[in-house]
Length: 285
Image (cartoon, rainbow, N blue to C red; front, side, top):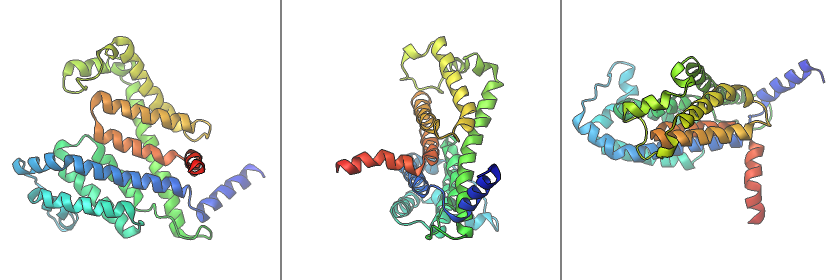
């Protein structure tokens, strides 16, 4: 089989068979669970903010219906969060369809609008992923040419490319910054105050560790988009990305952003890798 035939076979498979359906399901459930956790953690603080902060939410022809939940939340935060928790619990355990996926994305957008005063960027990424997730509904039949399968595969690839481009842009920005390449970024954050976790171990707050952390971030973000497509590199890169964001969570206390980035990494885990992880547990049961 020559290169042209191989490419044709890959394209035909993408049109007829959903790519990595188990991986996609785990990603979608994890995204829903992350939003549920975000809501539960933000409930009390956002209700307090709503009591003292005046939300100016657009009420136009299009924005009016789309942002009705956010306007309702501004006046009745506890009722809003209760309804959201109920919806997310139902969405977490029931089979997804296009209607619930659209509602989930609409909810993510309204959470973004309502939590802007206290957001750390995680809500923006959540909304972007929820847009792709609208089409992550695989066709029931695994064979035959289906537009739904094409949309599903395109959305799955779109999620992956979004993560890759996000990393690439961040890595390129760091490479062009003398503050990052010299390892002084964390030192500047430390002196600025309020940007780093005060409980972060002091023995890791040295120029050598700052330099190591800076270049670890640069190398991971710049090389991830190239190496992640090679099967032999995937497990290591996925582990490194998860560890990287756990480190950011610990060092900078960016819980919402780190959780969503970890969820986004899950879409790169293949079905056979999940099977390999869970097979020992199934065999020993």
